[in-house]
Amino acid sequence: MANLGEYFQIKGGKKLSGSIDVRGSKNATTPILAATLLTTETCTISNIPLIEDVFRMLEILTGLGAAVEWAGERTVKICAKDIDPKRLDVSLVKQLRSSILLLGSLSARFDSFSFYHPGGCVIGKRPVGTHFDALEKMGVHITSTDAKTYAIDAKNKKAAQVVLREFSVTATENAMMLAAALPRKTTIKIAAQEPHVEDLGRFLISMGVDIKGLGTHTLEIVGKKELHGAEHEIIPDANEAATFLIMGVATKSPIVVNNAREENLDLVLEKLREFGADFKIKNNSIEIVPTEKLKAIEKIDTRTYPGIPSDIQSPLGVLASQAEGETMIFDTLFEGRFNYLTELEKMGGQSKILNPHQAVIHGPAHLKGGAIKSFDLRAGASLIIAALCAEGISTIEEIYQVDRGYEKIEERLQKLGADIRRISKS
Image (tube, rainbow, N blue to C red):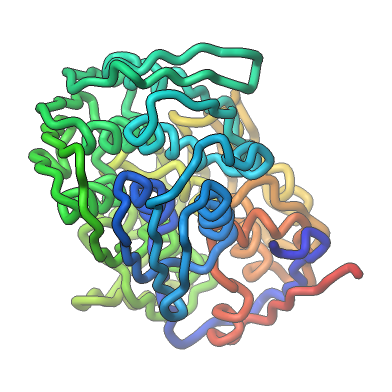
């Protein structure tokens, strides 16, 4: 585990140059790792990002009894033949939000087990009711033994028609994983359609599941009781690609972002063009054409895919601080995503939080280095962008949050010419 006492020291004001590679998708990797529990045969997963959330998920699988073997720097082989849900590591589950994804695969493999409320980013309420409701419709009975512990009874699991209560990515994925082990047809309506949901679907298909409707809000899934092992390569991380694109635009730097898929970034690129950005787009890369004057846009409105992801609202907020004029941000999904604005204000940013879901950012702000803190994964990435734009030296605390989703980010940014160092307090 990363040193929780580490922090970043960044000297800002430098233009960046060169290219940076996007790693595998964090949000595709964790559900696909959970899905390896659906089979007793070996699965080989490649292009895995080397990040803390992935390491924690692999530790949970190992604790359950799965055989986990690295077969290269970014490839792992997993055989979950002899797993026991009684061995579930409570402390790791409570630390990792994406541990909720084990609910579907464990319900598929076992008739009864105990589960625990997951942890994760402090970005507002993230209830599990939609997950429970979906699985209840598929015959899984869930009772709360206390505020954080649940008894799962999956003896009567069955294929069904499931209408999700909301466009929940992880609830969609849990329902998909349970349906993958049920021989009759399950229909999931109001399904999320993010690229990483599609990637999980492709992995399940490679295990022998029949899925229709990937990339739409209605999925038809016919599973099998005995799924086989499979090989799968994780898609590039669209959120990481968006972060680097925003970083280049904000610092007015002509960097090239490799492994960036335009089709997964359509609206993000369009919003950046509204700010005044321009790009050269090739088959597997996007190059930023710097503009010296950014202009504010009327509104950034986060939505489920293909809308602007909530995950990049905070990097866009930092970008708005460098644009001339006033930008309204409306985060429809989470009420705790504006914590970064208080840190940005310490650096000279000007903003006003109107309510838990809306804020106004005024720019351009002349940011100055300061001591700031990362409250969550995406806030940490946004504050790195702010520090790179700022005059002087910034320190960013709580960088474990950044390590949860961005692999060795300081080493990769150093190759672009960024003056960033990881420093240990000890």
